[in-house]
Amino acid sequence: MIKRITSIAIVCLLLLSCMTIFAAAQSDSANGDWSQKSVILKNTSEAELVVRVGDIDACNDESAVSDNGYDPFTAKSQYAHGYPWLKDETDPAGTDRIFVGSKWKGESTDGYSSNYSEFKSGNDTENAYGEGALTLIMEYDASEITVNNAILQLCIDDFQAVSWESNFTVTLNGKDAPFIAELLNHTDQTGPTAYIVSAIIPSGFFREIAGGKLVIVIDETTGIGDGYAIDFAKLLINYDDKVFTGKFTGTTEPGATVRLLGTSTTVTASSTGGFSFNAIPGINAVRASKNGFVENYDSGIVLSSGTEWEAVVPLTEGKGTPDIDFSKFGVASGEENNSGNSSTPNPGGSGTDPQNDVSDPEKKECWLCHFCPQPLGLCIFIWLLIILVVVIIIVIIIVASKKKKKNEKK
Image (cartoon, helix red, strand yellow):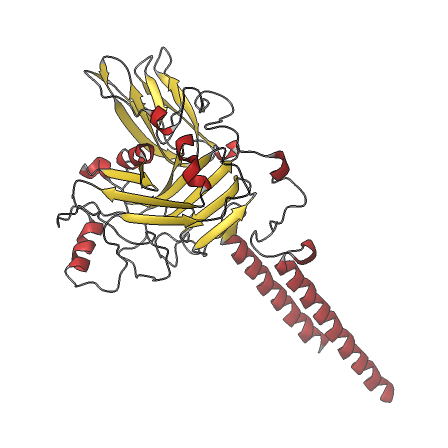
């Protein structure tokens, strides 16, 4: 009898261990529970306030994370999910839906837009599509913090402006945000895969950020059939510079000015044309320019350790076009410190606060599963394990006592 109980206990312990591992695999301290469609986190390893809209699931692919290792934060080559995908009415507006933009003329140039044509003709009523411009809405309480800096991350899926010559525009609370649009328009991404792109929000938008509601509108303006989607969007307010865990190098015309797209950060290429940037893992892009030359762009995947991409940005002689005037967005020269060749990146200013340092031993973040409440400081899975062990011990004692009494009667 005791052996049987012990066997059952071992099986229960194994199941509980599997549950713990499964829970941990679906969540992390910087992003919370991946299955949640709306998440607000405070004082994480990345920022003072993190706001996420949309679940992390490769556009409603149920097997992406659990069976195929989908993890957009690693920036390695991502799992190619199926499409189109079934709609989920609980998905936040703008996420996990195929769009073609408000100017769409009805033509199809890729698989997504072909599926969209089926939707518009009434032949596809089951899958997920969005009409007009893609609109994401983030709502949160920022009343207790002072916005010093912010980063907007978009997990983009099948944006192919480089291939199809489509043109995307982006607005934040109705204000033009070309520093985000340029990332989408110079990212060479084929689908169906989802990758993160990151843009530093200039100080001219801090009032919008502090207001507690950010409306992001992404539209395609040419009307070409370039279908696209967003898996999720993530806003980091008062971010820590440690988010810049990637680094890449490149070559261009000697002496050229190279800018990391999505930021106002620039470096000057060396006498041999070399340059380097610290970057956030994901798809990154650069713009190289020099007087007497036409500007050029390149993009690629930057990993969190090492790099998968070496930028090559040749320039040809000719008349270039002006770069984005960041002064219009409240960024003065030198406001965003150089994150290129410096050893410690600091674009947009420091996002750390000693009072909110994530190394604080009194922080409320669960160390094991990263998302559960912690009665008396212990993860809920540890409590379940303790309860299970106590129950097993009680059962063993009761069975042993009954067996002893039975033997005494004999």
